[in-house]
Length: 309
Image (cartoon, rainbow, N blue to C red; front, side, top):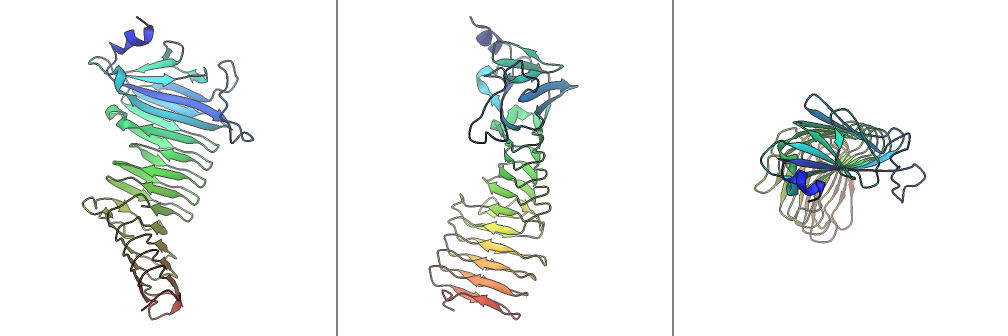
């Protein structure tokens, strides 16, 4: 029996971390550093009951943290660090098992930090009940936590949100892609957008900091007022601004209702029979294909020719 299958019998919950890096000039090809390299792609260690996964300074990390049902039995919980190219440095509290795996037992919390560089970090399959904190660090990061408390850090980040995720974009123009469930989104500084493009049900969002945002039947998300832009899906969406911010709302397909606030807003209905209400401020209204109703409000603004009323 191999060492890998033997350990499967004594582990309760494993999490897999796959680490790789790309240099700044090698953006199109992921190159894993050898085990003997002075800078490892990913460092993993345990302090107390917390396992830390840290991307290498000056490099773009590619890290996958995954709960592995294959190793689940009914004894001691552990983490597994997958090192297919020998590129994960093993720190205190962890030991290397078979060639491509590092074991970090008896942990209850994960802290993942991409560091600088344009990192790609994925946390998937609920972590087996282990709590998670994810820091993108500086750089234009792509973060996909399921679920974690996320801080994108400086840079123009893309953050996927699943059930139970709390996300702060940080500095930069960040994009939040919503995949359902309960979530809490704060854009931070910069111009940030929440994208419901994959949603087929009607979505309702008011940028007022109250947890009643989301699709029909799941309106318990919270999109805070420091998010400037919203993009709808194929349903009949309803978006409303709240503060004196220049918002941009794009309804997408469906018969959408877009309501501006006190700022100079841009409302784009997209396909469908949309209703656009500018409110205060000098607004730009674009009806798009369909029979649209457009009202720029008392302050006037620019109304496109494809607004029929």
